[in-house]
Amino acid sequence: MATLRMEAIGTWIKRNEKMNHTRKGRKHANLRRRKRPAKATTEGGGAEPMTTGTGGGGGGEWGYGGGGRGGEGGDGGGKGGDASNPKGTGIEALLLAAGRSLDTIPADLAAGARAGKLQPEILERFFRLENGLLGPLMKIDGFRERLLADPGFFVKVGIEVGIGVACKLTAEYEKRKGHFAKELDFVFANMVMALIADFMLVWLPAPTYSFKAASKSGGRINRFLANCPDNAFQKVPAGMQPFTLGQRSAAVLRNGAKLLGVGMFSSLFGVTITNALQALRTALDPTFAPQNPPQDILITSLIYGSYMASSSNLRYQILAGVIEERGIEVVFKGDRAKIGALCAVLRTLNTFLGSLMWVDYIRMFGYQKSGE
Image 1 (cartoon, rainbow, N blue to C red):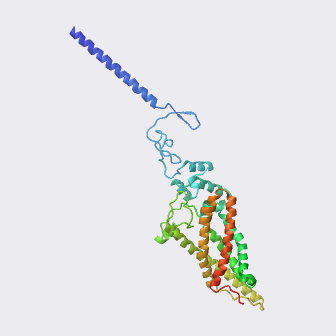
Image 2 (image 1 turned 135 degrees about the horizontal axis):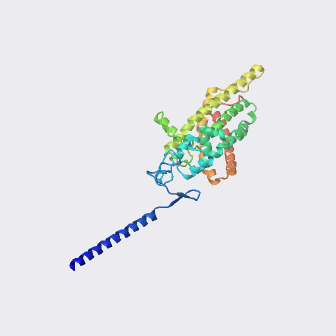
Image 3 (image 1 turned 90 degrees about the horizontal axis):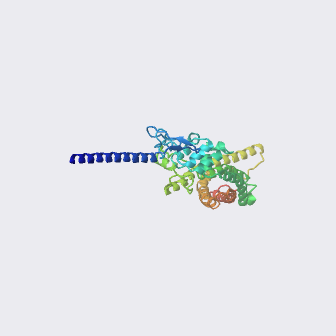
């Protein structure tokens, strides 16, 4: 009897162990089925049969692939993938909408997109300008960099070259008064110099936007100057490293050196024309007696160059970088009509002031005084 009882107990224990093992197996199977999605949703909202494969996916088209569903790639999370692709859904959307790729936009903007620094509004501005009347100029680095930083750049050029001529003539007359007719040759020389210089006075101090790589060629001084801002007071463009105080200070000196050359060249051109006209008139009319002797080309060029490097340089740096960019464009942000009108008034006053100062400056050196 004892033997039979022991056998019955052993049979009951084995049956219970087998039943418990079966229950655990079913429980784990149910858990696996719950965790495993039966379908994956596509962009169109439909269902897509789940596929399996070996290995993680590669990088997707925009650099958001890697670590995706096995065997598919490009759909998973994580920002792995090709480092040469832009970061940020705003840039991606703009490129897709325009039917463009990084290879079809300027290299410096593409570099900024790859580094995640290019702002969507800048890329949008580039596409808008490229498709407009200024499209051909957007292929030229200097124009593109200035128009991206300031869409009203050509408005300011128009003010300087257009209204500037009238202001300079008025200032010349105001300073010379009764001697205006006698000193007309000097006035003409000043106007020629002004037309050449006015464009450069807007061009050189204008804020710029560019992702060009820092210069690695030349000496330390050249590399330092190459990385300085174009305007000592301009804002730091979005996504770029802040300028140091030394770089901003050096920007004044660098632009001053450039304007020295511009002033000397424009003066050389203007004075040469004036002297040539006087010589031609004397040859054609032996009775003609010039009111003023021919100007010294070299001395006049040096004086005008130094004036542009000092007075003009500082006035235009402050006007473009402080008054306009940090003042008017902040207060009236988005209202291009008011910004343009105020810039026109301020640049007109600045041009008139510069003309008055120039006459006093050159006379301080004993030049451009009529023979009385």
